[in-house]
Length: 272
Image (cartoon, rainbow, N blue to C red; front, side, top):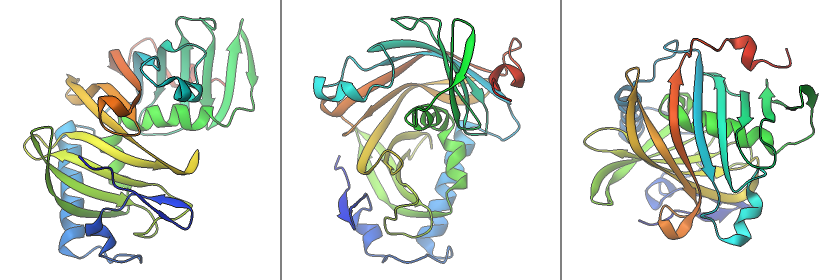
């Protein structure tokens, strides 16, 4: 599978040639490709089962494993340990509200979080707001990817690209972004590989403007399981290519619970 990217005004631009041929402006939303793209994203959300209001809190236990990364890339690990075990609780359908307990390593039992996108840490029972801009995209990204089939509905520009074959699976390829078809400094771009048979989201290529305007990455989803009627991938492989050679880190989930009885919104909102 090819990685789509070129440079536009200093920004990485992941539009494939089929989207480049549509031009750089604001699409009308009424073309056949746009309507097909929107239809496929909606079918994907339905296949995964995410319905707003279906849950209010998500509680996930997982390991974020950076030991698989080349040594030069391990410096991008936000955690103090290469195989960081985590208990991550966050609000459903609202980005920027996360509470994470570190379960191993040198910072075991510390709590790191964001409350309305304000970073904080709780160490030895003492809570402090911290100046760590990297924590926001790191935690919001994890919230976002777990519920990504739902968040695709918020992407205003969507266009069908083509049908393709990925690892012996037939997939629909859909492009999504905000503001304009071409790369812009305000918003990210996404390419979604949707399984043609199951309509599940298999792979995503994405930009990360808030971290590096020249950077793009992939997430490969695997080990799909049903949780309270919602199909969620229990393995997220992230890298600069969607292959073992391009792997940077891997999130392996032990459990994902929707609306655990032991948690309330007040447990998540540590600063309010």
